[in-house]
Each structure stands twice: as C-alpha cells, then as structure tokens.
Image 1 (cartoon, rainbow, N blue to C red):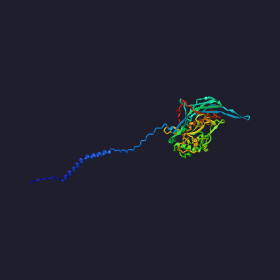
Image 2 (cartoon, rainbow, N blue to C red):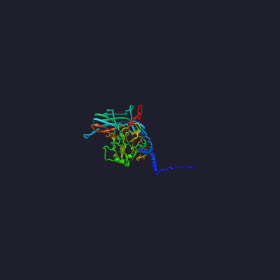
Image 3 (spheres, one colour):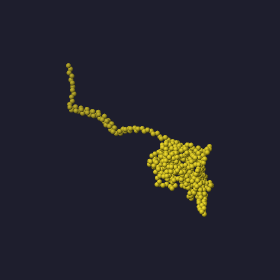
Image 4 (cartoon, rainbow, N blue to C red):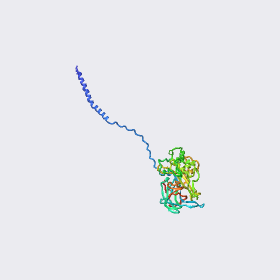
Amino acid sequence: MSTRHHTRCTRSPHGLALALMAGAAGLALAASPALGQLDKDKREKEKKPAPQQQPASAPKQPVTPPPPPPDPHFAEKVLAKTKVKEWTIKPELHVSAGKVRRSVDKTIIEEARSFSFSSVAVVFPVLENSSSHKLLLTPDGSPRVKGELLWNERLVDNTPTFAEGYQSGTRLGRWELRNVEGKELDLKLEFAVACYETVLDEKLAGTIPWPKNYFGVGASALKPQQYVEYGPLGPDPKDTAVADFVKDVLGGKDPRTMPPLRVAKMLAAAVQERLQPSGDGLTFNRNSSFRGFELRGAPDTLRERRGSQHEIACVMAAVLKHAGLPARTVIGWDLSDTKGSGRGVGGRGGSASFRSWVEFCLIDPGTLTEIWIPVDPVRMRRAGSRAKPIDQPWKYFGTSDELADIIPLSFHYLPPTTVYADAPCLWGWLTTPESAPHEASLKFTAFRLSKRGDDPKPQDGPERR
C-alpha cells in the first residue's frame, strides 16, 4: 500500500499582507490607462460646444399671385361712348361801344360811342374734349378750328393762339390787336366736333375707390369758381350754405368712408329733390340778342331752393367739390330740337338753346386715368321729383341719350383768367386802357358735318382728359 504525501504551502501573516499589497498595486497599474482615457474624453467633451438645436420649420405661407396688370380699356368700360354725331358750330361774338343818350333842347338824341385801345386781347373757349365730345382733326392732324377777329369790319387777326392748363381743363383761343380806335369788334369762330351718347356701368364705377390725391385737371377742378361757389360779389367765408347742405345729405359722415360714386349719387338725388327749376337764366339786349347768363352762385340758389338750370348746375358742382369730388360745369349748345340738322341762332325764339350740366371725376386706380361722368340734375328732375333707389342705374346720371345732340362749349361761364365782360357769357377780353363793353351779344349757327372721303373718323380726335 502506497502512501501519498501531501505538501501544503503555508504563509506567514506578514507574507500575506505583502501579497495583498502587490495585487492591489497590480490592479491599479492595470486600470490606470483606462481611467486616464476616460478623463481625457471628459475634458474633450467639455471643450466641444453643445450641438445647436435645429429650429422648428416655419409653416409654409400661401403664395400670393401678383396683381393683374392694369386694364387699359377700363375707363372706356366704365363710361361707354356710343352713337356719334359730328357737328360744325360757328359762334359769333359782337361787341359795340354802343350809344350815349343826351338831352339837347329838351330832345333826347343818341350819339355813337367809340373805343380807343392801345391793346386788346380777346379769349374764347375751344374745348378739346369732355365726357361726351372731342374736337375733330384735319387729315394732317391739326384741330379743325378757324377764328377771325375783325375791328370795324376789317380783319386784323386770323391766327389764334391756344393756351391750355386752365382750371378744369379749359382751353382758350386768343386773338390780339393793338393801337385801334373804332366802334365795334367781331369774333367769328368755326370748329368741328364729334358728340356721343354715353352709357355708365354703375356696377363697375362703384368699385372705384378714392385716390390718395388728385392731380392735373382733377386737382384744378377742386378749386372755387366764380358764379359757382360764389356770385358776382366774390366769396363770403362766413357763408356755410354749401357746407350745411353736404353735411345734411351725408348725415355728417366723412365722404371718404363711402365709395365716391355713392357720394355723388346721394348729392345728385338731393339736388334733384330739393331744388325747383325756375326760369331760363338768360339775359338779352334791347334788340333781343343774347347778352349773357344770370347767375347768383350756389349759396343763394340753395337758400331760395329754386333756380335756372344753369344755377342748379352750379349748385351740383359746388356740393360735389365740397365733398371732395372734382367737378366742373359744362355749358353746351343744344340742337336736339332741330332733329339733328338745320340751324340754331342765339336770341329769344331761337331754334336751339343753351344747356348746363355737370361732370365729376373718378380715377381709374390701375392706369390713374381721369374718368369724367356727366350728371344732369335738371333732366333727372323732369323724370320725377323723387330720386330712384340709389342702387339702381339712373338716366341722366352718367347715361344720357341726349348728349350726341349737344355741343359742349365751355367749362366756365366766364373764362378763368384775368379778363372781364359785360355779363358772364363764355368769352372775355383784356383791354388797355380798361373799358367794359357797352353792349355784347353772342349767337351760334350749327349743322351736321357732311361726310367726305378724307374726313377723319371720330376716334382720330384728341383723347386727352
């Protein structure tokens, strides 16, 4: 039987302690590179900036399509011109020094007076266009206008000069003479025009807003005018008749809180209903020739609540302007009674007569074109003393089948320049030394323009507004 000897290694307590210490040291040495790397990674991490957060994506806005280009035919759609008639009109002005009466041996005798001037300038309106007409041109493009100034029946000037830029689009022909003595002056005019009936698209016109401001002719038509806002004695700053009328009609509201077309209709309806047409508003000389217009101005006409068609037109223009809408009176020669042909002579019993109405201005917001709208409150009154509902189209408010038979002559009863006349009668003169005419008269002859192969078409005439 074999005997195995087992050997058992034993250590002293001191050796055990040393062994434990050596193991711990070994573990420490083994772990030191990993700990160092952790510290390095920590330091590097602290140095790096924190990653930025991506902003939340903004919601996509809908793409707004660009506005449509301005419609170059917008103005023509708002106020269409139809049924053209072409006319030739011949105004004739006669001015005489007249006669002076004196008593000789208890007998009244008349002696002829005479003029003596170092210079004379005579002006008469020749309008290029309005809402219902335009001046025709010759084949070479010049206006079809003739004008002769005679002194004592002798021709002294047949080459008028034409000046523009006056209030409301007025265009004046001017004739001159110097160092003359005599008893009479005559101005003979002739010009050709195309006149139209008009049709207003009230729905389209009602979309037109107020402009930021008016310019050109529209801005000038906001200025006060003699015989419109005030009478022959001049303006009275204390007179509030026009302002009170507008305030009452609009209920005290700012006109710009409403569409301009609506403001114009409200004022036109009030003029139609509150003012009674009365009289012809004309004055005549002793020989029954036409002398001029009788005009009091809008304030006095409003207080009287009645007036001639010319005075009511003045009221219409004054209240529109006070509300901020450019407006102008239009004085025309009416040939409707001649049935489209024949002649009309100024004076009592003539076969044609004067007409007055008003045009107010809207601005095409796309092209900034002025659109002048004709309004005839007297014709509206003849159709009824009460206005139709404001949202319905009105005859004689923009739409008129009569205007093709009426030749517009002037936007003023007296030219808007430094001239004077014996009575407001479209024309005026400036003399040196100053001398008011003793007697002046105006008459007209008009007839349909004959058609020839070389005649210009109506659309070839001036189109500026």
